Length: 148
Image (cartoon, rainbow, N blue to C red):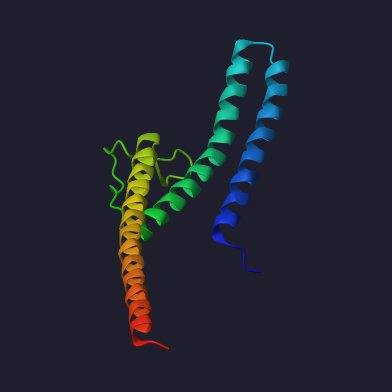
């Protein structure tokens, strides 16, 4: 069965977030049972390592979705590099995803491009409606002048 990519991604993100919540609940119990600060640190580290995998998966999905939109609108964006403030490499998957700065910059560029395209379409729609209105007026004058 064919499922639109947007829905498939939303389902995957929801599944990953649910897994994160389950891990958090399990580690909350483990943290409550921890007797020493060393046990608490181990539990916190275990929680971080297990949840970071799902966080990386969510970030990869969000980055892919945003870059597909940017590509479809021909919005330029910076490519992955180690010294870029826009990109970072995930800890567990070793894939690239956008930082918060990069995500907001690309979203801003996408909104601006969509706004520019919309304004262009509105301008042309006004011109076309004006021409159709003028032709309708000329046609009615011509039909009236021609008589019955």
